[in-house]
Length: 80
Image (cartoon, rainbow, N blue to C red; front, side, top):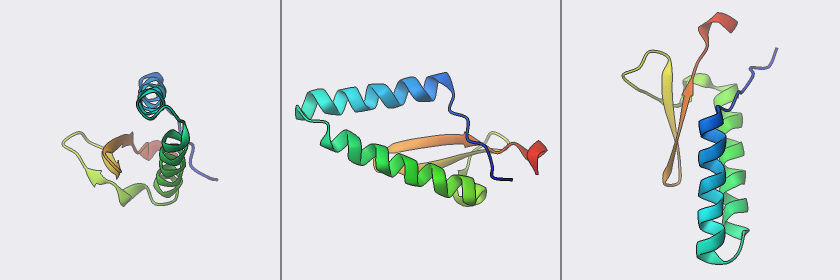
């Protein structure tokens, strides 16, 4: 069974705010589309290889860097 990726409300909101910022700053959505593709690739990698990110001080929470942004994610060991 493929791992489930669940975006928190905060993560969804932050992602929208990032895209809106770049859309307004560049007066175009092309950079936002590029970032979105990079985020999707990163999340796909995380789903395939959960240990890919850098560990944090919080148990089971890791960080994946995408450009100038950090994706914080938690590995749910109960699904293993």
